[in-house]
Length: 288
Image 1 (cartoon, rainbow, N blue to C red):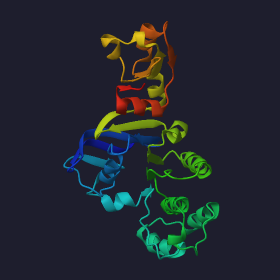
Image 2 (spheres, rainbow, N blue to C red; image 1 turned 60 degrees about the vertical axis):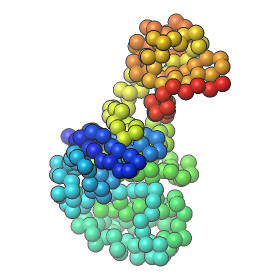
Image 3 (tube, rainbow, N blue to C red; image 1 turned 45 degrees about the horizontal axis):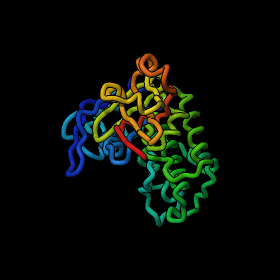
Image 4 (spheres, rainbow, N blue to C red; image 1 turned 90 degrees about the horizontal axis):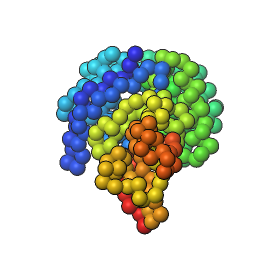
């Protein structure tokens, strides 16, 4: 069952265009949304949330049309961003009093419990919170109205490693309830190496792939070898290549074919998500 269904989304701005993006976010799983800065991740999230209207295409969430059913859909969604949209002059308690009435399923006990867990004083002013504390507040608010879908836009950007780890553990706990789903947009791919089930990769406004993470990491491979292995034909087998004065490393999207062609003369390794994103985004790159 799909929580989100994106079909043929197109959106053009002066310096950027998104073209025919289609993918699903499956219920009960964490879908990582990756891509370099400027690739279209935030634009895509705005289109999903109805904060921008597509030139073409559709978004369905919980089987309902966005933005037609926006009000009922947003009762069931929590959003966490690296940007703060709160009134800086208010305290946490005052901000909660602004937000809570919008949600029919607001759970005051949960909110208080999250404030305790995150060591946030309800008396503290928003303007006095660090970036990490603002993310914690966003998370507490997002999780306190029984949200079934959590949309996270660069939530760990600029956070210290300890809280990043705590956040990832908390998200893993949330997924024990198989009704819940998470879409996690980030350029910090190591976070997704730990917790994501599916990966959706956007580059230059276009969908590169949307697949199960384990399948991707089995299918792709990093090949390292001497420059004598590179010729016009072999270069075509690589998604991207990085050359140095002593050799090369490159990404292929067919591990079995790479093992048959290069296995005797090179080192073949399992890639990380960062490897896949780097080589796909950069293509050929020569150093030294």
